[in-house]
Image 1: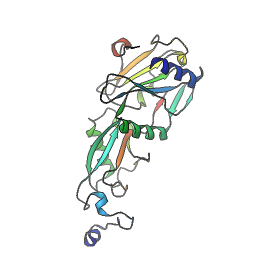
Image 2: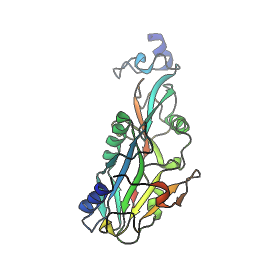
Image 3: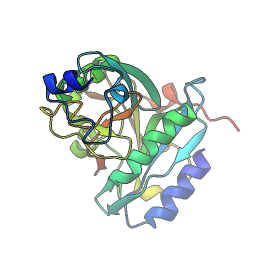
Length: 109
Length: 139
């Protein structure tokens, strides 16, 4: 594991999290869930995958919703994952985590 | 549902401000609307914004309870119609999602009289639909 962390420059131990929390090695996919309007769907991601890619997969999982530009990913505490170039690892997303696919703004007038 | 809807819209809006709520059904019985959800929001005579923290809490509750939002309902100060803001910023973006607008801050009789119903199409556009084609009220 130490060699592997060195090889990929992995700092997960420094953050208090092992690779196992991401479902194994950095390249190995692991499962999270994405929820939209009361439905949870499993999604396979990797540590090096960027949030923009996860968002596209989430939209596809829910049937390519109309007006996708109005939707974004949030963690279950409500923090928006705004940086689409950030990796899953950098966003601290772990195996089994729940992400919310939801609109950023809801208004009427 | 309709009584609770009008009571909530009237109480919250006080005849002066817009109000919004959602009609929910279980994912096990999509056609049966069974619950009214009243979001935390800021509102004025001409518009409202749903609180971001409420959306997060609501999104988590929906999946935990296997419930889904089928219809959004909100008031207008005068005539019922769908504004560009209503078109652009709904909570749900699915084809088939319905939006019901109640006129006169819901101060009229408890009915669909004067109301406006519109539905998201497959291409994402809204299109007005007859209310009687979508809803029936059971005692």
